[in-house]
Length: 271
Image (cartoon, rainbow, N blue to C red; front, side):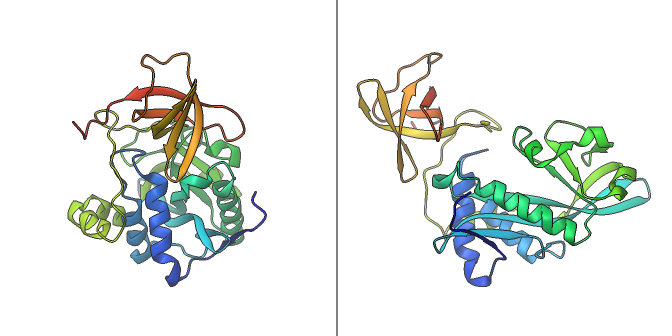
């Protein structure tokens, strides 16, 4: 973890900076643009927000990460158990690979235990959260609100009471406000107008990879623009098309070794 990293509660003067960081963190990750800056505002105003265990990460006076917790419920017929869920978990994209997200999760899990919370359930990236003790929800008799099970639905029991809980995970009804496209459009005017990218039709989550643009080519090394960074990368053996200057690419960012371009694609939002 970064030596100067501070994990603390969010203050009103942090709000705009945190929202911008979260927007950058999720920009073009699941669909063109992002909605997390709106989600954070919805959470702050929700009766189900749990600020006692929500935290931001600060590095040298700059907000570089945040995680927000809300109440959730596991419902089995007439039986209803209160737990918590979290999201978004956001990290400044240019500082990925420094365990900022991990520091936020470890600290807030500790706070949740101290506050007597029974357990945490979430829908997230299944390759990431098990390292913090999260397990498949199906192994604990948990489903989503429609009764479905899948690897992304995970949970972390925090005390013995959780062993007797099973049922459907129900999140705050305030999350439905995220579907207000006009509100998202209005709030987004407060932030920089970043380029929107569409890689494929429908949901486009790309686990463990990033989107960038080749800014220059030096022999067999491609300099990939990713936010304010230029990342040197090699072409993967599986590449069907060789990148050139200006190419939109999908790449694996290896923070401690060689990064690799895995795909050249056409942005479907541009001619």
